[in-house]
Length: 250
Image 1 (cartoon, rainbow, N blue to C red):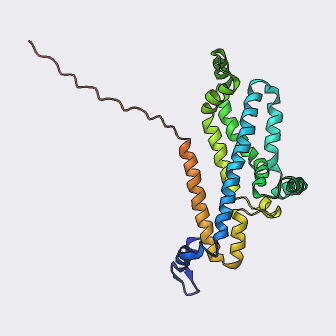
Image 2 (image 1 turned 45 degrees about the vertical axis):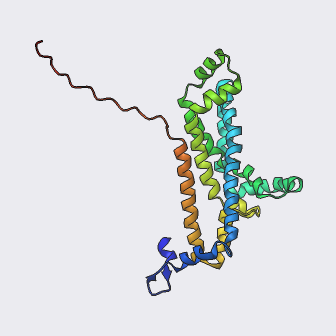
Image 3 (image 1 turned 90 degrees about the vertical axis):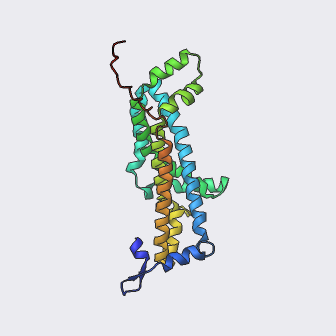
């Protein structure tokens, strides 16, 4: 992709003229809507993560503690969207969004609910794997014995122990939302991928440059999320033991 953006005609030469033209003023004028679309995608990613985790994590903890027989049903419901193509989801969501548009407007932010369904299988698997590795029942019973409320148990005891799974679910959700095209295109919403398609019709070279920048932005964002999940506790350095010097006769 980098080599393609630097091609100069058919003579095999390469230069950085297109990059210079884009950074020299293209972002401020002709391609400014791409920044608006990027902001839409970032907002959708944040909204999707909040919707999925706020609804999914407490429900999974409740089923794990109180209703273990419903785990298979919960797993089936959460994994079902991965077996349904996005275009089929749009066919089912289109009548719903027509009602939503009449009641709350056709804002691009409403796509967060559709994206929440799309990323549900990935977020469920990430959280469930962490949930199985933690003794949630013992931790919650110990906290309740010490007088903690259920909200305190969830926020102060369980969520810190499920941090890796929650961040992994957020990681995957952001990656899926930033790369999603089908639902936004068929529902006539503007996100990063639909804006890049419009640019590619006028100038494929500039569209590839913006795709590279979008990849770099997504990589940096996901790297930041990954750093947030890293352990902050460092292993203390061991002090070197002083050499044993035999004492001579006094």
